[in-house]
Image 1 (tube, helix red, strand yellow):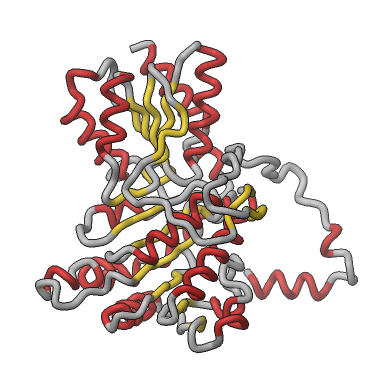
Image 2 (cartoon, rainbow, N blue to C red):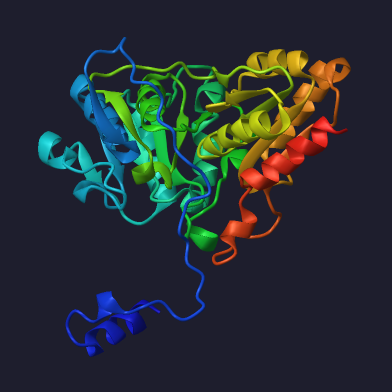
Length: 372
């Protein structure tokens, strides 16, 4: 397909390719399925600067390399900045021995990172897409997660952080849109973190890098350029395993992470306007270990819970949250817990708008809960 595209481009007169109109009747995406609303600029961390999500990641990595002389960044194409530009300029600033490319081998990337971390250095590995993390599954689950336990804490690889672009992007289809957090949530010994914004991404990534446990940091790729807000220039940390209540409410608790947080924020506004329903919105932020206390405390107050994520419904992390809340808050529940998630199919291409759990699906589930 790529070769055919290049041949067609070469056969056309100069400049014509860019003026070609889309095929008649071809579907065209004119808007994202969410609206990003920036958080207020923080004042407690000093000077801020306008950054999108990938720039906040770059800033965090820059801070980490400057602070820790043992820190190294490696992965496919990171030396020139990476496919999403998250490491742009870092090789020039810190040298080819600290920011360098690897072969196209995810198992090797993570295995190499484990080895570096065991020596006491700080290893920051990049998997180019979360969809391609599965060749490294054995290294993450059977090596990184168990290294400290199997050695009786004589050795550990806690200074390993694995970054990966994650989630839907509008055109990623089967192999560039997946949300694989639930696969790893079944594995004690690692931490899983997913930010919703540039401000959150920098603070949470720096916390992962300094945490003494191996961490997987999934970055919502659709937000790399779509999310822009004021981010502190200096390093700061946001605690792991602490969910954030973004909006207080009394009637329904809504839980999400990553991009989906912005979807449920819109749903909360719709529910208030159309139904007079007061929603409590929670960004889980850390998937493993997750903040059960904040979620259960909220559900005990509201009596209703809606959980939404992009990953397929069956076996998704919403199932774990639902099960825990049902055990802890059974007598408080006023309606069955609702899960609004992706379908149990591979992630589609042109049918992505129908697959994703958009605000209309979430709003419909919320309305059913209220009327239960």
